[in-house]
Image 1 (cartoon, rainbow, N blue to C red):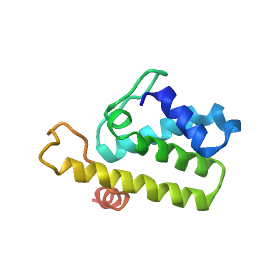
Image 2: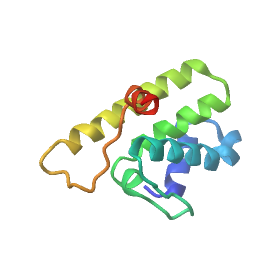
Image 3: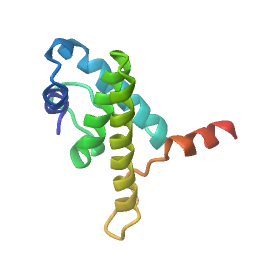
Image 4: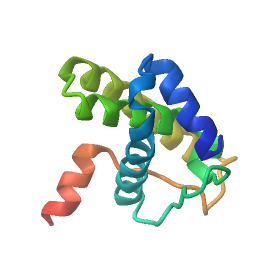
Length: 121
């Protein structure tokens, strides 16, 4: 999915068209978090732009964007739920990364806990 498609999905799933003006920020925050976890620089600027995650694992962006929206609206219950869904999708990506069909240049993400350990060392 490209950025515009992701934006539309986040609005659709959230039932919050009143926050449409904030979706770019939610996607940018998600991209930033992904870049930290991947240790690389993904780009998702411009409505038609896409990257390996948005193209092959769009639910990571959708759940990440919904998590960012929940943080923005201070909805802790929704944040927790979307965080779980986001981490489940990251786990799927990592399972795929460990399969023989995955290429060496495909992303592998650290869990939030693994990131804390890396940051502490």
